[in-house]
Length: 255
Image 1: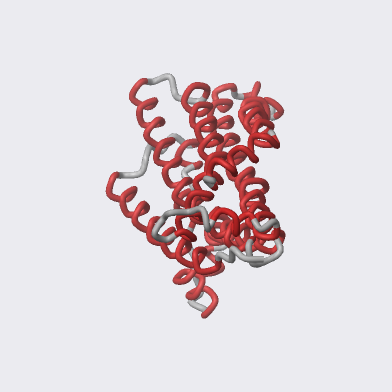
Image 2 (image 1 turned 90 degrees about the vertical axis):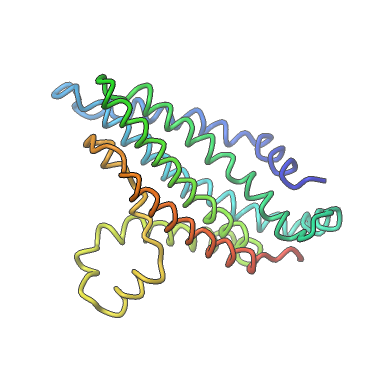
């Protein structure tokens, strides 16, 4: 029995993913219409791009992380891991099973990310060909950074769910993302005083706000330079390895 196929069949049988797959592009297209865009019609495309990416992050927090933590909790209590592990022929059965399931948990992220990029490319891209090429590169950079953040956090939410209440595990992962994405950036002037909390936050918590390229899209600043983008990939890749190793040590298959 393959854990990935079992999870995907459960996911699509509940059809929740289809609701989000339908609503996310619709809201991204039509929500900016509620603003007074008639005053300056040229702002509608950047507003749609901003709405699509913000909605993707919101869905990630309010559903994808919830799905990951609840799946871990539900499968452990149901004894599903105890059925899947003996049937595994892998050298490291626990790690293989967890990574298989994390691939399934990432399927909604990949689907919604693809929709977000398509909305941004086909409905929001600048008319100038040179700017459109830069716009495309920025979107693909943004998508790469999004997946590098989402993959290990989904794994952490799933493994925490096997040990803790799903609400607690979800709140833990959501707080980590919100801190790195919002607090680190918005409150940077207040955290730069050199205090102990500020220093520990910078050193021991990921700065996810570096992966937020929404402003680069809205203000058409172009993609990140290749060197900077490579550094970001290494930074988030390193954090991904650390978080994944912590998650694997927290995984609890037995009831």
